[in-house]
Each structure stands twice: as C-alpha cells, then as structure tokens.
Image 1 (cartoon, helix red, strand yellow):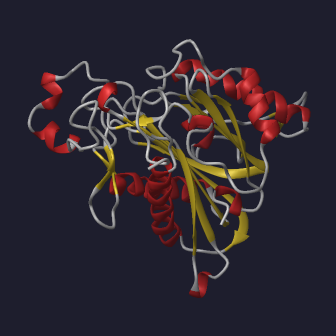
Image 2 (cartoon, rainbow, N blue to C red):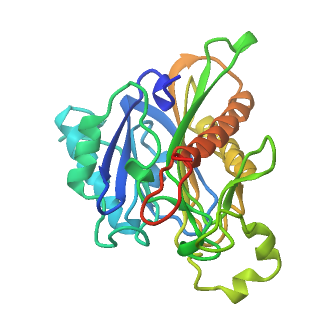
Length: 324
C-alpha cells in the first residue's frame, strides 16, 4: 500500500534540503477534510492549531504542514497557503478564500546547518510536488534532519526519518482504511512492540551500536546528571487519516487514540520537553465506530514509526539502519 495517500483525496509532497539537513512535508486534503488534533508533549510549536478545535467556526482544513527548523520552519505554511489560494481552495469569506493550514514543527537545528530552515518557498514547492502515489520515506521532508535516542547527547544518537503505513479494516468495516505518516524526532528510543527490543536509540558510546536503554537510565537519575544532553530538542509529529466520515469531535478522539501508537513504540515519550502532536483527518463517507478507527490508527502510527527508523540512512555523522 502507498501509505497516507491510500486515503482518497490525500496528496503528500516533500521539500528536502539534503545539504542543510532539514525539510518540510505537506499533506493536501483536496477541497478540505474534517480535522482533529492531540498534543501530548509540553513543548509544542505550531500555528492554526485552534482551527481544529470542535468549537472553532471552520469546519474543514485544507492542508497540514510538518516542518523542521524549529519555530523558523513555520514559514513553510505560508507557502502552502499561497499555493492553495492560487488553486481557489480555502475557507470562503466575502472578499477571498482563505486556506486553513495547521502546521507543526520539530527541532532539527542540531544536525546539519543550523541556519538552514524550511522557508515559504520550500512549503510552496512541497505543495506543488504533492501527489497521490506512494509516499517517499526515510530522510526526506520533515524527516530529513530527524534523530532519535538523544538522552546521552547527539554524538550517541541515531538517524531517524519519516515513515507511513496503512491499516485496512475488514468484516463489517470492509473498505475502511486508516493511514498514518510520522516524522520521528524523539529523545527516547524506538522499540518494536512485537518484541519489546530497541530498534534504534541512544548508544553507549559514539563508536558503538550497543544500546544504552535511555528509559532505564532516566530512572537512575540521568536527567539530573545530563541536563545539557539535548533534552529540549525533540518532537514526534504524526498525521492519521481515514476514509470514514467523522465529526470534528470524533476526529479529535481519533487523534487522541492514535497517540497510543507513540506510547507503544517510543520510550520515553510525551515528556515536558517534547512537542509530540498527532493530527487526524477524515475524508470520505465510509461508516465505522471511532473506537475501532482509533485501534487501527494506533497500529498505523506504531508501524510508521518503525518504518521511519528502519528506512533512515546514515547521515549527518549519525548511523542509520537503512544501509544495514
């Protein structure tokens, strides 16, 4: 399956700066999608997030932007709005159509060139490049500068990236799809839920691929001893989408349930210095219970996280798993 673009109406585009090691990923929603959001990290960075609230007047969003560059990367959303306006897509007002484009950023300034940030031009380029085919994964788009396992500092971290996966329901829900796309920039380690084993994470030293088990070290007082180890430079961003019809309240619940996929796969996760955020999108007219969709969404998020680290190449001086 193609990943997030398995959902009819979704197109995905990347803009990648391989020299500066940053980028952005744009998810276009056609004429609009019902959206929801759930942020569990305490150090989020974003814009237009309130438009996803069930109490907000806007009923649909037209794109989601995930970007590196920390707060500087929010500029990419302006390029997406410019692109959508030219296509005549947006929330109708008396004078113009205004595209609704929620965005969230991750911190990748500690790898590559700290002066390289996703720009308005990169956002527009990613939107123009968006298509409905198989989504490129690994060190691309918002995952270009992503890393994992930073509890012992960047020198002992590993390269991560972006992954996507789809879960197809069956039986009474035959034809219902739930897909996820995740840019994994976690301070914690990534574990395979099927085995409990660390797949990628903090290494005991810079020359080793032996894992240190960051969660265990935190419980031994690592945070107090290594307050400078990069604990403020993390965020995992996810988008889940379904072809089932949902209200904004249900889309918000879907985002909340999808967060469980992070909790199953990233150890530790949702810390005070993380910006972990999940967006949920509903496009289509299929019928399914939101709790069932949530179970599938958590599975899709978990699978996407594993793909993000397994498809990440060695880059920026950090080892990746793709070439191994």
